[in-house]
Each structure stands twice: as C-alpha cells, then as structure tokens.
Image 1: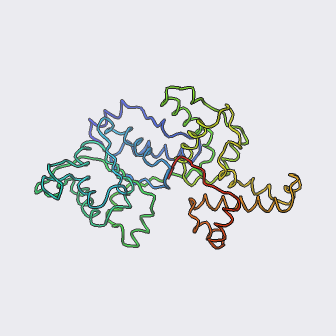
Image 2: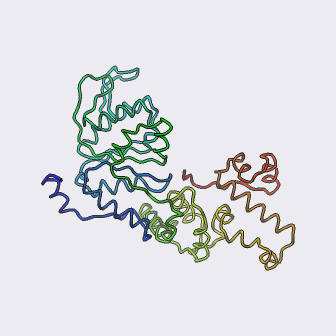
Image 3: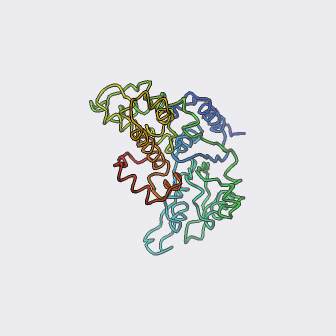
Amino acid sequence: MLPKTMDSKLSTKSFCCKEIAGVSDAVNQVINTIRKVAVSDASVLITGESGTGKELVARAIHNNSYRSSEPMVIINCGAIPGELLESELFGHEKGAFTGAHRSRIGRFELADKGTVFLDEIGDMSPDLQVKLLRALQERKIERVGGITTTNIDVRIISATNKDLVASIAQGTFREDLFYRLNVIPLKVPPLRDRIDDLPVLIDHFQEKIIQRTNGYNCYTKKTFSDEAISVLNSYSWPGNIRELENLVERLSVMVESELVMPSDLPDYIIASQTQAIDTMSISGVFQKGIGFNEAVDEYQRSLILYALEQTHWVKARAADLLKMNRTTLVEKIKKMNIEQEQDFPFL
C-alpha cells in the first residue's frame, strides 16, 4: 500500500498515454498494463523487439506514477563500455581510476526519488550484474573507489530485446537479478502483430513532424491511398515502429503530391508484399502482357530484394536465405542493377 502522500499525488493526476498511438487489442492491452503498474512501485521488465517503443512505455509508466515530478534517468547498458558502466551507474571518487580527476555522482543518485530506466539490460556484464543486484536489494550504492554508502530511492524499469531466460540457461545473465527485475513483465508487441494500428500511427507521426517543424511548407500532412496502405500492411516491418516513423518522415519530404501511392514507397517494401508475389502467378503474367523471360526476371528481382531486406543487405546471409552461392547472388545483383536505397537508419 502506498503512503498517504504518494496516494494524494496520484489522486490528483489523471492517466495519460497519448504518446502510445494505436487502437488494436494488442496496444490496448499494453496501455491497460501501464495503467495498472504506474500506481505501484514494483520493478517492471519491458521486453520486445528493437524499435517497438519500449522506452515510450517506460516513460508512460514514469509519467503516470507518483514519481513523475522527479527525474527519469535513462541508461543504455549496451551503448556504454563495460568498464565505464559501473561509474555511470554509481559514480566514482577522485582518483578511482585513470582519468578520474574529480568525484562524480552516478545516474542512480541523479534519479533519487525518481525512476531509473535500464535499457538493453541483457547486455550488462555478469560482474556488474552482481553489483546491481546488491544495490537493488540493499537500496544503497557505493561509488567506484569510495568507502561509504549512499541510500537511494528509485524505481527500476528495465528493458531488453533479448531472451533473458535463454541467457540464464547460457550463464550470461543472473537468475536472481532476473527475478528482481521481472516483478511485473510487460511485453511490447511488434508492429506486424498490431498492423491495424498503421493508419493511426502514420497520422500520429505526421502530426509530430508538423509540430516539430512548426508547420513549415515542406512538411504537409499527406493522405495514404488505400493501395499504399495495402502494401504497407503486407510488409513485415523488421524495424518496427522506429522504421515506420522514419519512413513517414522520408515520404513527407520526398513525395510532392498530397496523396501517397504505392509507387512512392521504397522498392524493398513493394517487393516484399504478398501481392507482388501474386502478380507473378501464371494468370498474372498473362494479364500484364509480359513475356516469359521478363516474368522470370521480375520474380527473381523480387526474391532477391526481399532476401536482402530481410538480412539488412548482408549478402552472405541473403544468399543462405535464397539457398544459392554468394558469388552467384552478387553477379545477379550487378546484372539487375539492384542498389540499396539510402533510407533513414532505423535499427
């Protein structure tokens, strides 16, 4: 049960989750879980593929909690070298290591009375996992090179795109830390499992662009044709929400008309759709009035583009997917003049 002071803060705060757009059952389930866990102080482990919006979920939990007026400090455990991560988390004293010319407080102290979001927690080294576990159990930290402890009052939200249960079996993640972090599990679905949200997400991202650019003329809200939406619905979205957001921004800049058509979409998206394969059926060949050789070339091109996009243009992996030699694939890519489009990075 929360203390009365905490409860009074929550009673005057209305639930808001506007950054998470969608109308599908999958996203509504996530929002309902956020609503429940936000009023508690339990640790939450958010899982899901890269680009699904795990940080947005963490922010929504923090913003709807009694800690919302205090800082939310984000630490990407996969982006900081292991030898520096301990100092980032807990701080260090002057002279603790080479280059430590002055004392520095860590992220846990910066987040006091707020929330610590440990992103990509599955990438943390086993040695540091032990120290993190001790800090969470005792609610105390010790700076690198220090001899005194500091009390901390933080809520822990962590996230990963890895299978931590498998990591435990492999001996790379501590089981006791997993149970400490996984008090409330929350899985964020990939975009392909909430494809009904595409139109809502497209509108949401366009509105964000317009607000960010103060409505400059080069950023006008566009309408996506039913045919374009159909193509997007058929795509597997390996980059998830992040990929869609970057695609919407690209189209808002590059498409001059107010209506987005399938021809405006990147080749790899068009090639991957089921409809593209259907047009290569026997009846489709005759309906299009193309010859045998042209039909075979189009089909090969679609298969190669799809394999390349599924493997992020790693030719060796694409060749394995297509069950052909890498040299053969490279020759076909050159012959067909297949080039990777310079999209905005999303992974």
